[in-house]
Each structure stands twice: as structure tokens, then as C-alpha cells.
Length: 240
Length: 240
Image: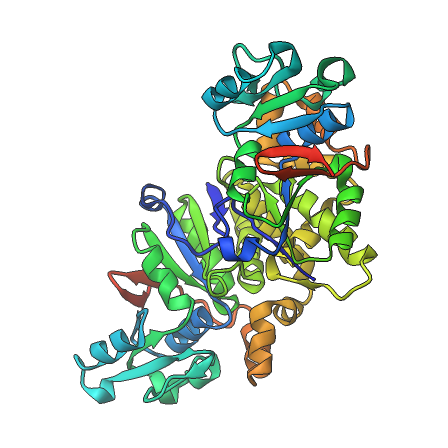
């Protein structure tokens, strides 16, 4: 197995994607929200790129069966039910509902990698389960941090590095790491004892604190809260 | 001062470049060759992107006044005087000569950042001098690793990380690091005691060893061999 990680969220080569497992990561906060919502009983998630698309899609379902969630500028979108804090997505708000979600970086990323063989939703919340699933699938792996408005994201890469570390340690077959994967693994080891420190040092982490979301950072650094592996297929995320 | 590092060798935003100092790095081996050749007395270097361009340019000068250097597939180009090993570029071969150089990654990188305010040639050989010059220039800094055939390069990023470390430590003004710069600095600290280990772990380093250039790795890991700061301007590299 070859493990690669793409540091910038540009569209990967479609030929490379078609036989790979792709893990999309946006720990602050889109994929953390997704994993949290599904672990609390959301039936499926539709990640969409624009607010208009979310509102259009909502029209196709009874209002009570869906939840509109997401952010622009880190804040809840006018007219939406929920923002982009995982702690808003509990059983009471999402159980048995379809979640239509649009965020600045994370939801876009899924559409960039939609040609992947399997597309998994990764976060610290389910990192162990994701690693286990990657080992089972036994295909070449592309980790896809969603980035910070097109730029390299420290916190997503640390999470990608943890995934590399787990797959490398627990996998029984030989694993080859690209230069980028080695870098991510080293980055993870630097923050292994204190993941939250990486969040505090990151540009996006600082921005979230500035906007009043410090609690989200603390919460999103929790590991192995659930063993679900949400998978993106034909525009929809469901539990594998 | 803001220090950023671009992990992939794609053309940066021209608006961002115009007021920045750019440091191009290709330690294995183009910028190491450049710094070495200039420290041994080469009068100037013309980095060009293709073999044809190099041969065309050579026609404009008396043959004895120029040296044709570079590689394809790590090997010397047919009809060229020298390959891409720094140890080929000593006083006897390059003193007072114009060097026309074409390599797979490094020489291309200069043309991608040609709109930069100042464009410096960095390597471990002159890393201390480059750091000093960046502090003097006191502008926002973009470090530009040349990459490994379009991919992230471990060894160039470690060198970029060392530059970040030096500028951060020795500069007297406040410095802001992007997420990418923080990552490069952490990567450098991992290999601080043994730069050669980063070369051995890198994809391109392994490839060079496979092709018989192990000695070049050992040589290119030497730091502060010279205090020259070559600068790229209007297509030509000269000592500042």
C-alpha cells in the first residue's frame, strides 16, 4: 500500500483517484460535524458547495425530515437550522434526519475527490475506525485535507499524520510513504501528546477562537469517540 | 515579516510575488550546483527550462566562455560539459565562465517566480548567508522548494525549514509564520542533527542513490560552506 497526502485542496489527477481510497479531513470543523451528526443518528448527509444549492436541495424534502447546517465566515448561515459546531449535532437535533451541509472548505473537498474508489469521512472523532477500514480495504490511500481557504492546513495535516501513523503501525502489509506522508507523520508526532496545541497554533484555529469558538477546538481534539466510518458516494454520505 | 513556504511548485499568485523576497531551493541538486559554481568563480548563471533553449543560448557566446550544465533523469545531457553534481563545478571548470544550466525541477522554478521582488538562490551551502540577507531585506518572504517532478519534496522543505528557523531566531523584528512555515520548521527540527537522514528518506534522494550519486547527497548536506547570496534577475543569476 502506498499512502500519499495532498497538502493543497486542488483537484487530484482523476486517473490516480479511480483506484484509491480517499480520506477527506476537515477537523475544524466540517468532517468533525459530519462524524458527530452520524454518530448521533443522522440518516445521511448531503455535502453541498453553495448556500443556494443547500436551499434548493431542501425544497425536495418535507421540512421536518431535514436539517440545514453549515457556516460562512465560521458563523451559522441565515435561515439555517444549525451552524458548524459538532456540539450542535446531537440526537435531539439530527436523529433520523437528512443533513444538508455547506461549509467553506470541507464540503467542497468531497466534490473535488468524487472520482475516488471509496471516499471516507475522517476526523479525530473516528480516526481509529478510519485506520482500521483503510487497512481492511488494502488499496492505495490518498489523504485529502480540506485546507484553509485553499491554503495548507496545519490541523488537518496533523490528523492525516495520525492516520498514517495508525495505518503504518497496525497494518500487516508493507507500506510505502511519499515525502508528503512522511512529513505529515513527523508533524503528527510533534503534537501527539497535545493535539490541541496544533489547533491553537494553526491559522484557522486562531480565527475560530477569535470568533468565539474556543470550545469547538477542545471538542474536536477528542479521539476515538465513535467507530463509525461515514462514506461519500453519489453525492451522499452514509455509514458504511 | 510574514514567512510562507509553498509546498508545491505551481505558479504563485503574481500579486503576492511583487513585494516579496523569494528563496528558491532545490538542494538535490540544482541550487546546490548554482551556489557551488558561483562560489568557485562562475561569473553568472542562466537557468533555462529546456535542453534546446540551453543549446540555442550557447550559440550566442564564444564556446570557451560558457559551460553547458545540467541533467535529465539525473544524468549529464549528451553534448553538455557538466552534469548536475556540485563537485563537478570547481574553479578549474567554471571560473570566469557563464554557466547555462537546465535541470528537471530547479531551473524551472526560477521562471515560475520571476515576478518576485528579489529572488535568491538557497541551499544548505549558503543557508546562513541567505538568512542574513532575508533579515536585511526585511520583506515578506516566500520560500519556494522546487519539488520533485511537481510533487512535495522532503529535502527542499527541510532546507526551507532551516531558513525559517534561522530567520526566526536571528531576526529582531516580529515574525509571523503561516501553517506551512510552521510545518517546515517542525520538519527541520526533526532532522536538525542529521540532515543527511532526510535526504536518505526522500524519494529523490533514494533515486539519486539508485543512479550512483550517493556522494552528492553527502556533499549537499554541508552547511555554510560559503557566504555568497546569488540573486536571479532578468533571467540571470549573479552574486549580490
